[in-house]
Length: 195
Image (tube, rainbow, N blue to C red; front, side):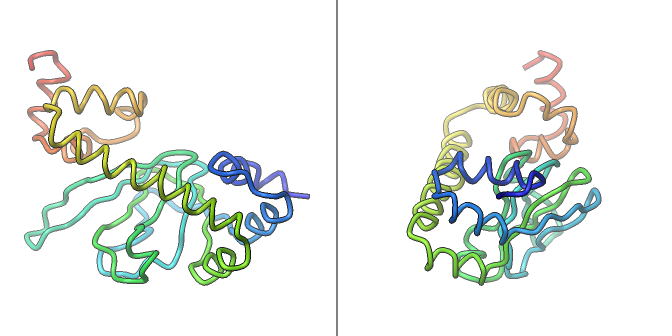
């Protein structure tokens, strides 16, 4: 029987793709729960991603730092979402991005070798993984690129609020402006209805 403490994890796993009960139990047992403080770095640029994470509670920011030290926020994750540097995790290469906790956060994690062994052992889990990549990576990347290409700053902000209604209560305006690829002053004007 799956532990009650992993109920959020098993619900998340099952929502992506239905797994046979025995497989679901084995996969859930392979995740460990951790709580980290605000500003903890799950991954730093240049490190190899050794874990895939699932957020139970918390707010996470993905960002790049250029050679001049300027940070550019590219994504946020909140409750019930997978977290990780997909390319780094899949290929075990140095990550291009940083992943930072913006709140004290509780997450489950699974180690790369354990994850790969489960994929090889269980066809259903391999199908689960394909579905997760489709839903939580490919579609998000395509959506993000389309937003930057075709939506103006105000439209991008309105879409962000639709996706994450409480974001302005949890994420700094500086990080939100960076994600929208605008200055904080422009974001202030949008919020004040001046744009």
